[in-house]
Image (cartoon, rainbow, N blue to C red; front, side):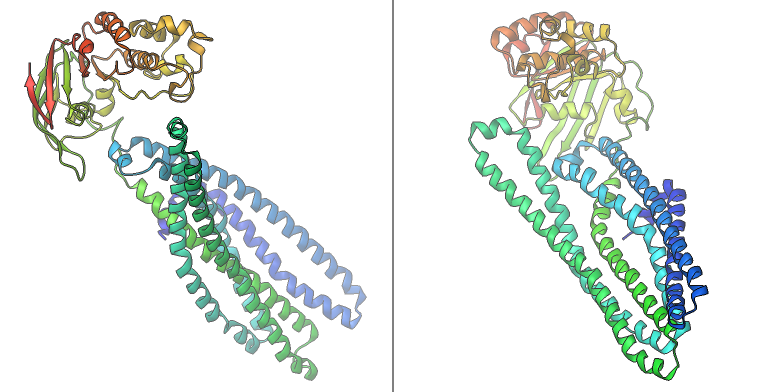
Length: 548
């Protein structure tokens, strides 16, 4: 495990972690004093020294009280730190995930990402706030017990210490099993989360094809796999502590057996024997707990490895990097563009196209011919392998992503809407948009009339992905969301796909005024939408075959 990376996540809380560790160290010192007082108590009781008995009992009571206060204080501090670390790690990974390019998500399932934000972040937080601070107090207790036992009887202490290699062997054997199990468990959890998330999105399709029983069986199998792997981990982890404690207890019994002749001959006093046995019993606790620390380290290793692999992915520089693109007139030029998705044939090959300011251009062609890919390159959702894209003569590769994307409005074929009000969904297009701006954008998109007829008007909540709206209504909401930016360049990617012919014709007629003074790119196959265009450009297998 990369301890330096792990400590960097704990750095903002090092003060509180040090305080809690110090409290636990004081608790260890109190624990180390108890066997000595226990031995003294035994000596006093056996010698009938009643005058000293009260002081020793009061001392024990004070130690118990100190331990309780120290344990409460350290536990409370660590619980607060744990919650804050979880929150910070979730925010950090969420911010980073938002900044990653689309290619990152094209090779991963969303459930894997959800598992990272929930399951694995929790593991890391528990290790940082629970396991790491306990290491030094446990070492202090173990070391202190050995030293104090050595002062009582060196030979017996050496005998007890000889069991340490056995502990080491147990830990190594457990580690060999725990490490691969931890990785498999993480993958199984991610798979189960991914399946559930995907199935909820596809629920209408699952119902339409009556696949409920099959999908339940598949998900049950994945949950069972994750459960069995977790049980296997916990079985090994649960055995570590008892196994080491048993060895320590066996050592205590052996010590008692070997020490009994010394008591008979007076070489060891009863109080020393009691103290020695109590120290030996105390030693079994940190030894067992340290074996648990080893097990937790193996379980956390896989989570940290996955977390760090995502953090090291290079993000997009949305708010930084490159100069700001000036307010655009909408002139676009694609120069000899070439692009291929990883492991696939070229999506675009030597594509050149010039679009004049204020022009409406329709892109047509078969699915997969490269139309949408060209638009993704215009927004720099991907970067071209070859060639340049210029807006108003400026190479967009050298401008900031924020200034570029703020001047391009996109209405996608598959509209993505939030489970929020109509007002919030349209206002999503511009941070801080007020209601008059939202209503103006809705009027431009020819959406205002149907919105005010909804039960709560602009405050109507539309459900996940706008499920409470018709397809055409969702498209109009998406257009209003794009128009509220007042973009110089507007892209409609099959934006009328959900309209019937009459509705499409009406929409097209109404949008002529909306498109005025903007550069508009329409991706479509539909004749009514093509009628909006000043010219049509046809794509075929990644090249332009019919520019007009």
